[in-house]
Image: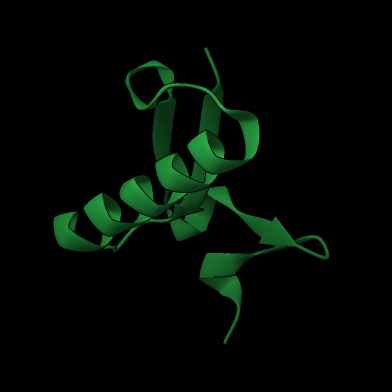
Length: 62
């Protein structure tokens, strides 16, 4: 049973999330041969204050 975790900044619509999950699931099925019913996708929304690049919080970047 393949598990996929997608971490992204918060703000995507439910429609965007549905499309992402569908396409990722299709790719996993195509590349691994797993059945669609066995592919599990976790979406983790991160707030800008929980994400940093180069030692600077994304919420502090201009």
